[in-house]
Length: 91
Image (cartoon, rainbow, N blue to C red):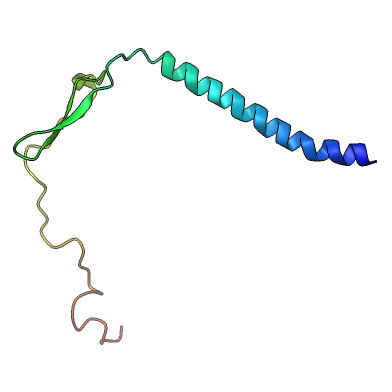
């Protein structure tokens, strides 16, 4: 009876350890098989922009940059509940 209780306590630990080792092996294999020798680096330009230099990122696969900033007709943080006097009125 005591052996069965010990075995029942050890099996979940052994299973979790085996799963962790298997997932760690898959992660190491994936990183080695990625095939990118240049990890790249981020460089800040004089105008404050940060640019990725080098790396295996293909610029063709990136979305195009926005030419002009987005403009809003109203402040998106405000709604009818945050305007003065709106909370005092009953619906």
